Length: 195
Image (cartoon, rainbow, N blue to C red):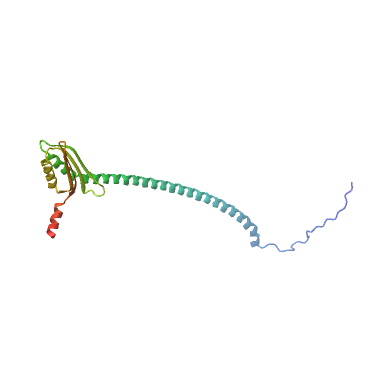
């Protein structure tokens, strides 16, 4: 078998030192290239680690913010419950305090009853709009108005003034209805002193 002859060009020069060698500074270029690749890999890994840490911090801050907001909401709910209890307590306190003037009134009405008279029905109503006025309804079994006059006199002794009184007598029972307004004696004295 015969090989055909081919002509191969050799571009390599046989002469040495055709071009001068690279300076030492330029020999650092490949070294700097590989170092820059290594630094880029290191910085990318540091960035990835820092990114993961930032995501974890963000998630922990978000979780703490959510827990704080839920605690704040719980505190608001507890405060609202406490405020409603305080309102109920102050309403009860004001109701009790406003019912104190009724106690002496009831005592005087019951003590004014004579031996032959008794209270069949006693009703005291106060409106929330005007608590100083008391609507009184008194039914007693008495055969004369003397007992009623004594009771009204005892009520007036407690500085209550009766407005629009009505009384009816029938079947041995006396029914008396009036609106009572408390008169402050110190206020009356001040008004008289000013005149």
